[in-house]
Image (spheres, rainbow, N blue to C red):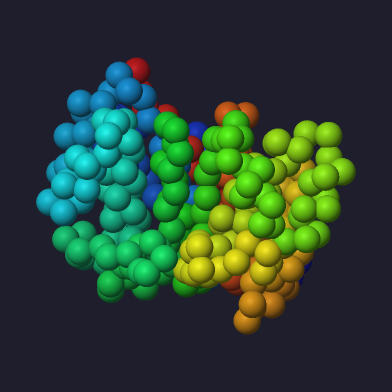
Length: 255
C-alpha cells in the first residue's frame, strides 16, 4: 500500500486546563495511528502544572524542576502526563510505571502493547500511538535556529543537493530536519543513526516523503506524513508499517 493513500483526519477539541486529557478517545485498530497535540497557554500555567504533577511521578517532577525556564519544565511534565495517559489507555501500561529512556533518549514503556512517541516544541506537546511498535513524531518551530546550516551539512547528499536549489532554503531545511527526526525517533536509534544514512524529500509533499530508508529497513514498509500544526511549526509522523488512517486530535484550552 503506497503511503500516499494515508487518510489524515484532523479534529479540533476544546479541553479544560485542569483536566486537558479528558475527552472521548478514538479507537485504535490495525493499520491505524492517532496523534494527539495540546497547545499550551501560559495563562493557564497553575492549573496545567497542578494537573501534570498529579499524573506524573516524583522523579519526573524533579527532572522538570531542573529546567532553567519554568515553561520548559511545564512542557516536559505535560508531555510525560500525556504519554502516560496514551500508553495506559491504548497499551494497557500501568500509569504508575517508571518510564526510562533508552541509550539514545527514546522513552521505554514497560507493559505497553502499542508503539508510542512524544515530541514538544514551543507551546506544542504531541504524542503519537500506533499498533506498530516503531513510531516517531517530531515537531519543531518553523523558524530555523542559527545552527541549522551546520546540522544540514551532515544530511544525506541527495538532501544537500536539493536544498541548494531551493529558494526557501530555510523553510525547506526545517521541513527536512523535522522529517528526518521523526524517522530517527521511530528507529529508536536517535543521534547514533547518521544523518547521511537515510534521506527524505525536502519539497512540500504531505506524505510518502521517505526516499532512502534507514539501514536494515525497507522504504515501502514505512508510512510518512506531515501533520497539520499551523504556520509557526512543522511536524512529521513516521511509522515503520503500512498505515491507512491517522486521526489527528488538536486540543485547545477553554478560555
